[in-house]
Length: 546
Image (tube, rainbow, N blue to C red; front, side, top):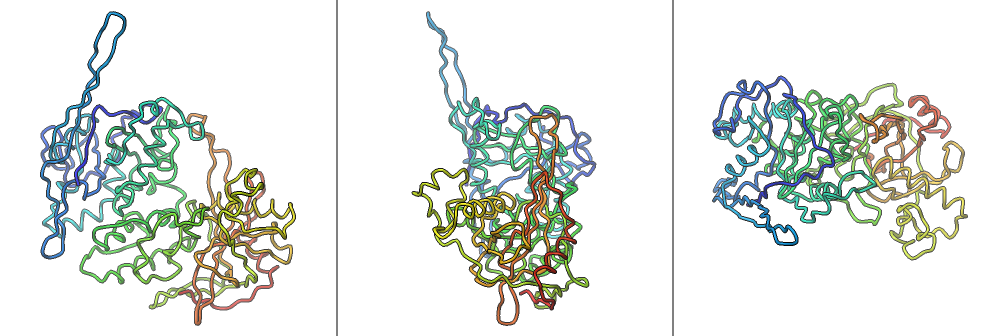
């Protein structure tokens, strides 16, 4: 596949981003000196270096060899297009004539042009900086990639799908986000791009602290919160939720898996090796492309679960219209239900996992998770039957929130009940990014709400909730301040939901046990869990989760 780069580029940001950082102290083994495109020792870059993030298949034509491996053939069909503006004076006015001149080049020449225009002196580019013929060097450098990207001055990501042809969008502000409309367009195009769908680019993105995303005709900056500079007022999910994961003080497994389970790779082992780099320190996975993929998968998820049970914090993959938001790429590996590959992980930090047990859990050789704790059976769990049922209903037209679309016909509910159910749906969707698919109406006053929402990956009329509590935490900030000022934390207490199988249970989603408004005093998670299961009259036994 060949790409086009149009210059001069337009800037999609509202603010001009400049910084003098040299990045971290780490230096890769090799770098490219861009002035003469020579491979030099990394130590030469005393003032820092940049890293390249790109889709391998967009750098040329993919050719399959006889052994099944793939190569890239670059026939020099990438395109650099130079836009020129010619000033023409008439008697009454000044007019401009715009012209374009295109040249076909190799990918290397295209990179040279980008480095020159963005003043990049040293670049880490895997194709050149890793000896592709040396298995030992490749494995060593792969294990160091989290360090390579996190210590760079910034990463430059090539996303040729970004194309904002309406000049007015660069001048117009979206007042919901305070970004330019051009940036909103670019962010939407990023999520549909090949770059967004690859496993390695997820690792490169989450390990980077600053990223310059270069499209076909426009570019934009994203900076991790810890690296934002004075005057930077951009507001986007990449800056807020994804960059600088390595340095985040508050981070949990679910925050990565919410993206990772929908990524692809040329070699299936790379789905895990890229993830293992993100979780450096939590997992220890040796690079071996000859090993059985099921062995690699199981070893990785076992190590994650032994450190952090937030990988069980996931819900339905459906959107509020009842259609899948994305397609999992992990469904063919026969992984246990507690890995969450059948659903969508919540996106916010799981601050506390409180477990009612005496204490500990184990994972056996069959990848079954054993946990002895109290649990309670929810009877008469009701499914939202009809997506879009309120579309032509007067209540739906007057609704302030879109989540009316997923509620079934509620003719037997009074108006207060409708409002209560609406609120529970909105609260859970807002807190987890997982749309509720079911609800449960408690027959006692243990819960503070008459309708308890559940987000499930499959139907279940009788569900089991174990005494495992997830405290989902997110910070809410005022964006008008410089730097932005944190004003409060929002908390939601979530419980995993299990479905009974013949000889075990499976995790099928989450239930919201309690939503704390910012002005409410939050109860201690462990005390909340104790009281909840005492009030429910739960029983205790070992649960085997397949």
